[in-house]
Length: 195
Image (cartoon, rainbow, N blue to C red; front, side, top):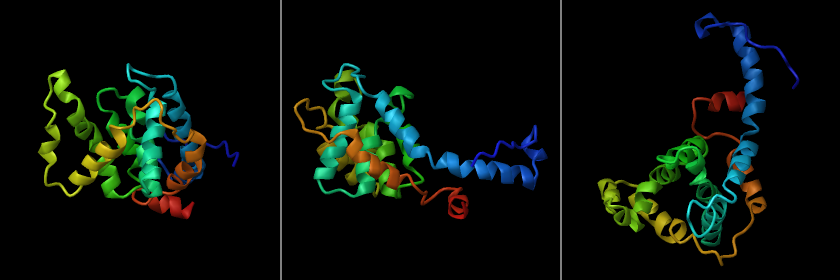
């Protein structure tokens, strides 16, 4: 759609039904390009080592490939691929970025797992930085504790092997597009269904 009309309000409380109809017509095409923007941002991780044995893109691909080969669901695999996408934008809280991207598209367990993986991953290295490696114990008893610990143990913390044969990003593109195609839980679900 090449509708170049724009809303006319200066403040939202001045908006009209016509203004919001215009905005709504622009929303769906823009939202439909989310997978493209996410894939483009993943490519930023290419060549960014941060001192690690492999770059951040290869770590993401390796985590996803391990999950794929482990027989996980497509949503799980996409969550594994995107779990560190926030590294470049939010160095101190990168899990929050990935969790926010995934929240409308995955179930609560996967959202919680991605949102908390940083603390759970800390079990493997926090003590080397003078931090408490058992910080994750604050979440012991949570219904998604074991799933998150398992993700870190068998997929995330093992995904720094430079000799591992990871599938390329192109392999995951169709999965990313399917998972990010339509929200399951969001204030905009109705808008997506009507668009």
